[in-house]
Image (cartoon, rainbow, N blue to C red):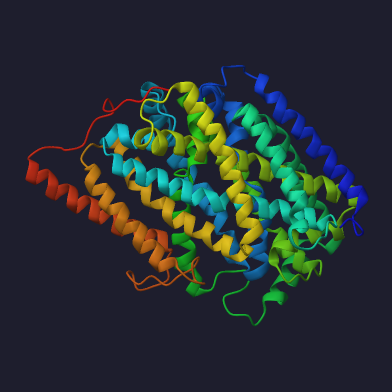
Length: 503
């Protein structure tokens, strides 16, 4: 299993992994609070200022799989892989306008999850359950894909094995993650995010400066990439006409879905106040700049002569070829730690959602705060085990398809949450019907090998399935709300004061 191990790279990797492991356990004492209360364990007591929130949200949204997958798509098909850059730019004006308002409502009413807000706003348990179910379902493969990123760099170190043994290093790493997340809650990824982001910035800057210099400059990099794509349909340094509409709609749809995920909500609601969120909406586009530089590594891999059967191996092999072993180990550690932070936040967000919006309202309405926190901790372990099972027993490509489908699902709760922040016109029943239509249509359109860049059966040209489905969702919700409103002769939804849930 270790016969081909790159020992210098592995030593550096293990050092930094051990460092963040210690930090994860020590984090329970940081900004100390009663971790037997869910808002302390799952939201850090809502005491993270602008600086901490910047690292936490950055570590939560810009993940290990981003570092692996975005350049992998660029390596495979070219310019289309840059869709991630505009969508992460589009999202921050939306965050600036909406998330401080959501934070104010959540803080006032003791909400811990997006589904808490949904129930408080509409008083509809069916809609609450739909939103909670969607978030958990979409999060599981997202966590699994963090493991894909971690596993790729572990394999690049030289770990080899047959069957279950091939997953042993990954399993050990995830057991460690599970233990310190259980102990420290959201404080662990918040503290580790400092180390992760600094390491990511270091290896990205080194890559975009040193690798092109060794390859003859960016001109040579682009020339080599253009040659690699030559003669291949819908591949190249610029978008083909057929890719333009899918590119635009995918960027817009991905932006609409991103902050609907439970882990994004967790990062938002853990902030100390609206000012911290507004400052982050202004500062977080710095990560988008780094993301654009990361995407360029797909072109660099072609220029460096990297040939891999799986495009996800392109970045690890590029670093092994272009840098000393010790720096490759440093970079791989940054990617692996970049998996730990979002995986921890995602499991916490999913656990909070299950506990507050599925178990408590439908199974154990009178559960105590201590019982609530204990159940969330247990669920965070179960979620991680489930994500690990996806990697062990399911082909990676299928897991990728599920994650892409997750964006189509998450955008379906956009109308309920965002419209609910500004108007009480929509009915909870109508929004639930809209969710059923959007969820079903999005799943139907996305099922199959064209899940990412499908041809819309509604608009008649290439478009992202999530956009098509959420348009249908919104139309159904609006029409049915109008019908119900006229039938009852009044506005039928609740107000923010309805159905409060204490933290």
